[in-house]
Each structure stands twice: as structure tokens, then as C-alpha cells.
Image (cartoon, rainbow, N blue to C red; front, side, top):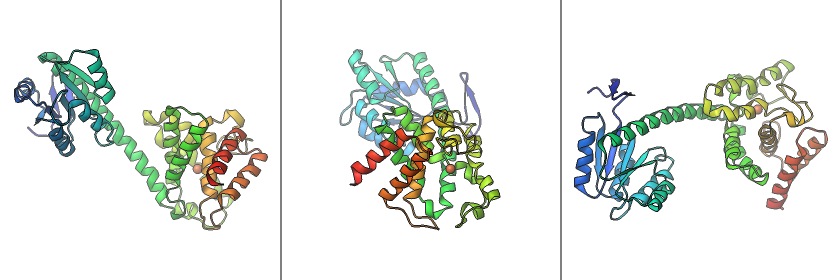
Length: 332
Ligand SMILES: [Fe+2]
């Protein structure tokens, strides 16, 4: 069958046959599951222990794994744990096919990252249905990941234009994590500021290099163009639902606590908290990085600039206080 041909089978629509690997140390079990799936348009691979499975999964990148729990060498729980902690394989759904009935084993499986369980002896219809659902889900997540990947590559492309800001986003992302943790942010918000650090300037993609890389001060008109980048950036990321929580950071990272920023001139706590945080981190990283018109400032000098700007009302004092703690604690 043509791999690219749209296949309709059992109410599911796949763009290509999904690849399924059956992992079990008992060849009879492998064969009986294969028999159940043989007419379902899956491309089937087989492995007979955990070690072999990990090697094969690395090369074939399956869409789903049917995994036995108890196997020699590397058991199913360990296989699951390894796959779910590896960025390349963590999204592959795993169904554990097991005779284990105990709740504890199931819990161990879930903790290892197993997505679903099926008990032996396998019910044909149940197995087919669960595989179909997880493969479909995998397809959706894959599409989402691809779209996000494109957006993040775009952000990298913007950054790469300016050799003076090289890895500005990476440094910001790491520093924002340190600052965010000290400020008591939860894991969810830490993830959002990490993404925000990478995406905050993505709207600069629309600004010409003559303005973006201009060594001297900008004219009034040029600055008006630069000031559009938070809104342009928000527009670029808006179609991706998964990036919705990051949009306020992108839109408001140039707002200032006293209302002197842009695009809206928001003031104080009207500026979303994570945007205020990224604003401070952005400023600190710019000051400590070499620019075409000045050298990088030493940390203490950069901090002094931020303190005096805080006195003028530009930054949230509660965030700057913690920034000060971190810099002084780590570098004095
Ligand atoms: Fe910006």
C-alpha cells in the first residue's frame, strides 16, 4: 500500500500506517498479539527483551510500544523509564501488556511513564481500540510539537541575526529559571517563563536588519518600528494554542512599572507578573552583554543601573530585590 495514501480503517484516519513494536520475552505472546493486529494496517516490529527493544526503538522510532512487564535483562518498567526520560522518545505511547494484576505494579508502571495497561489474556477488541486511540493522540501531539518547533526555530533565527546578542535567549531562559525559583514560581510558571525567554523577541523577525543591527541610536521613526515587535510577536504565536500562556510575556515584556513602556503603557501590577520578570531579566542580560556601542558591564555595575532605574520607577522592586540577592549571593 502507498505509505502516503490516506488510510481509513476502523473509524480512524491516519496519514500513514502507524508503526507498532511488540516487546515480550515469550515469542508465543508476540505472535498472538501480531495476529490480532495483522489486518489493522500497522507496521509491526518485534523485540524479545528490554535491551533489544531499546535498540530497535532508537532506530525505528515507533508510534506505539506494546511492552511486557517482566522480562530478562532490562524489564518493562526500566524500558519505560528510559524512554520517558529521553526527549526523543518521551512522547511515544506505551501500553504495558501484563499478567500483573496488583495495584502496586500498575502504580510502578504509571510512575515509570506507562500510558495504559492491558491485562493478559488480551481482549482483541480492547487491545485494538486502545492502540487506535493512543496512536491518534500521538499523531495530534506530534503535529503540535512540529508547529512549536517551527516557532522556536524562528525565534532562534531572529537571535542569530545579531552576533552581539548571541544566545541571549538561552542565557535569559536559564537566568529566568533561577530568578523564578527564588521568587517561588511553580513548575508550570517556570515552564512559561522558559518559553517566554526564547520567544519574547520573535516579533523582530519583521524588522529590517538596518534598524535591528544599527550601531548608533535609532531615529524616532525607527524606534516606532521597533516598538511594534511585541504585538507582531504575539500575532506570530497566537495560532498555537499551546503557546497561549506565553502570549502576555511576549506582548508586555517592554512595559515598565511606572507606565513608561510599550505597547500599552501599562502600570504596576496591571503588567502581567511573568512579563515584569522577563523584562528585568532581559534588561540585566543586555547590560551584561557587549553591544556595538559599549562593552559588557560587570555584574555589579549592571545591578547598579537596574537599582537606579528601579528608583525611577521602571522595574518591579520586589523582583529586583531578589535579583540583587542572587547576584550578590553568587558573585561576591
Ligand atoms: Fe523585546
